[in-house]
Image (cartoon, rainbow, N blue to C red; front, side):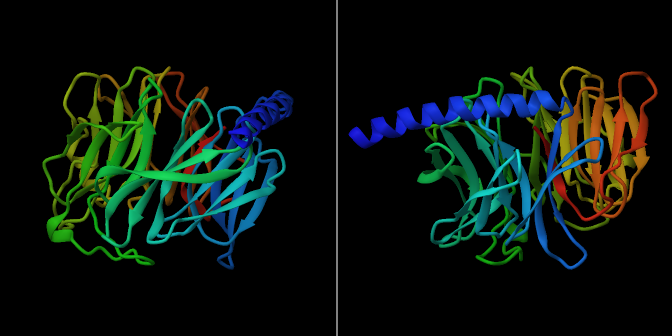
Length: 365
C-alpha cells in the first residue's frame, strides 16, 4: 500500500514537471509534430519526429519495424507500436527521441501495430495476437508508472486478428477492428482465408461487449479506423478474395446507425486494387481521407454527403492525418504532401520532408 501511494505521488509530480517541459516544447514550435516509422535504404528501422517545415526533431533507430504511434495526453512521450508480428514496442521521449523503454510482448503474444491511451493517462491498450490460439484477439492492458509501462492484464477483443483500436468521443468506449484472420507467431501468413471472421466491435474498458457488426463480404478484412468528434466512425478494409471482385473498402457507422458501406463510386472501388492503408477524418471540415498505396491513389470525400472532393494519383501513398488546413499524406516511394482543403478546390503541395520509406501510418502530436 505504501509503495502504491509513493508511486502515485511520484507519478503525479513527474507528470506536473514533465508537462511543463512539454508545454514549453509545444509552444516553442506551433507546427504539429509528425510521428511515423521509417526505414533507410539499408533496411534499418527508425522512429522519427518531424515538423511540417521539414526540420527533424529526432530519428531514433529501433530493433523492429513499427507501425502506428500514440502519444500520451499529458507527458511528452509516445509509444511506437511494433508492426505485426513484432514483439517490441518503443516508448520515446518526443523532445529529443530518447528511447525510454522497450516493451516486450508477453509469452505467446505479439503486437498488431496499434494501441490507445486512456484520457487519464494511466492505462494503455494494445491489440495483440494470442499465438497459442492463433488469431484470438486480445487487448494487452498496460499501466503507466511515471514514464514506464507495466503489463497489467488483457481483455478479449471478441474476435480474430484485431488490428486498430480507437476511442469513441466519450473516451470510455473502445472500438476494435477485428481483421478476422488467423496468423501464427512470427508469421504474416494467413491461415483461414476460407473462414475469415472480420468484425467491428464496440466494448467497454472492462471488456464488456456492446456490439459486434460485420460487412457483407466475409473476406473483407476490417483494418483501420478514424473517429469524428461527433462519434461518426469510419473503417477501411483490405479484401482477401478474388482480385476481380469489387469490395466495400470504406465503411461508416454513424451514431445510432448500423455499420454499412460508405457511398464510394464503383469505379473508385475498382481502382483501389482491393487494398487500403490509412484513413483519417477532419471533423471541422467534415472530410474523410483514404490512402490506397497499391493503386497509388489518394481519395478525399465529404463525410456527410459522400461527394468526392479529391481523387488524385500519389505514388505509394501511405499515412494520412488531419491538420488545421486539411490533410498531411506520407509516401513510401515519393514526396510527402499537404492538402489544403479549406476551399472548394483542394490544393496539394510537397512538404520538405525526406522522400520515401515511410510506413503506412502517421500520427500528429
